[in-house]
Picture 1: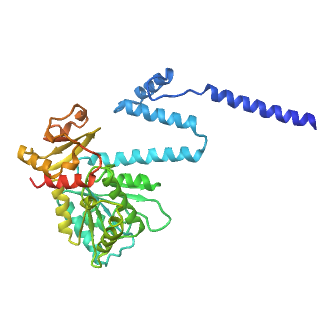
Picture 2 (picture 1 turned 180 degrees about the horizontal axis):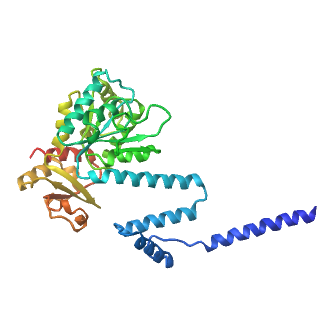
Picture 3 (picture 1 turned 45 degrees about the horizontal axis):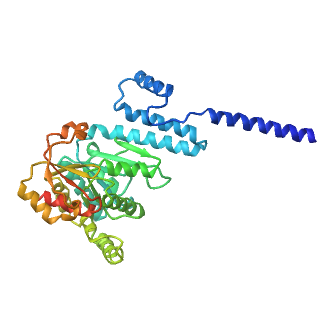
Length: 368
């Protein structure tokens, strides 16, 4: 018996020694080019594949994958990383050919029936947007999502569908569409909704709709997505009016948000007004980029010195103390967007706090 116990202990000691030796031989990979032969092998791999765009970024992705394999032995973690990467790669591939097309994301209940007035409002809304050259992104399911795709038509629609055991099968408008994407993870789907859109329209809905809408509020309020028009399209029962009462009395009333955050959204029952809000947001404003503390705003037409002074006087909170708003040429860092280099620009040292005011600032620019 004592012999068996010693044999058992020796066997475990040898196994521990084997795996300890393996861990000791594992490389400490770095994102800097200090990995010797591994960096050379990655370079060779990319050369073998063909034309790799932005190889420095792709190299970091490969390093990340290798580091994950070294650091995690739990299959579920690795599956999450793997599936996330695959879903986001496919999302980029589907949307890439339509990069220059303006897109509006529509949120709303999967349980809205075709005979309901708000369903018909959504059809008219998306049809009018499509007639103006916009494309529509929905969740691809029934209800308001189907109304959005139905109004725009299959050729002007995207569907970012989530795989669920109920409610969320692709609607018949998008069932065979090459712009239908089926997601396993909600968070990847949410990225597609916001990242690829130029505006968000939210119709009445349940927990899922409110979750999607509140995330957009948060992303704009915190500057984690670029400013964009957010329109809450109400029904005859005042769904969003009652929500607004709650926000005003409870959330603003308790100081959980600021009054400037009301600049982030517009409530309307009129689909034509909702479309005007979207179109006017891009009347002169085109896009923006941050470079640390410096904010560069691209415009469709140049501002005069008097108009810039009016902006400075009306929105002093946006600027770091002692700084000014000025016209500027494209920065060297903007060379990766060559199609935008001809646009006029203004820049300011942004305080990274008043994102609600930044939306109001953009609306003021559009009035010139």
